[in-house]
Length: 53
Image 1: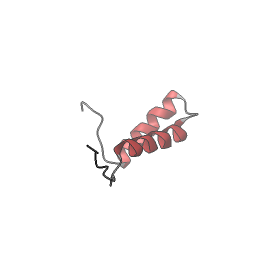
Image 2: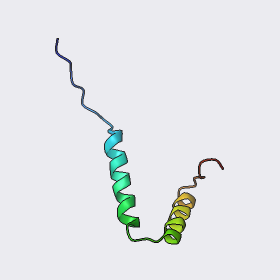
Image 3: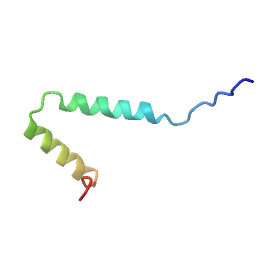
């Protein structure tokens, strides 16, 4: 029996890899304090809260 292959309309793995690569590129030479500021700015920009708050 052959399995039918569906074409994906959304690839979550690719999206996650792209997002991780973008963040890595933007933060690769940052020191810890710069990285903390970057994270805070991204959370405020996207109106998100850290987990547990």
